[in-house]
Picture 1: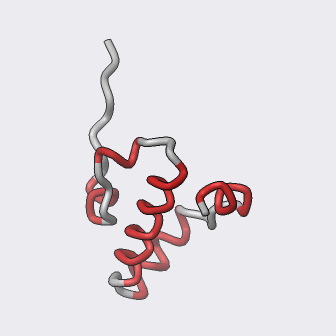
Picture 2: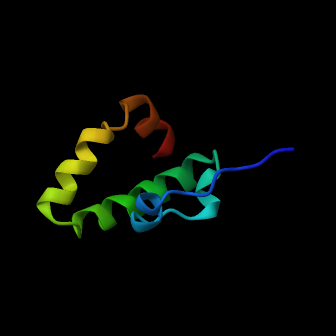
Length: 66
């Protein structure tokens, strides 16, 4: 049985959508743009908390998505 864990509340707050499981680079790039715009709306303290858990996307993935 393939059970998927539901997204966390933090993921939902950051704009997670079910289609974000896609491996299509264009879809991933769109998801990153959405997440970035949502992160910009957070307070400085919330942004600092996120920065502790998430590192920048490596350049090799950026090139594939453009």
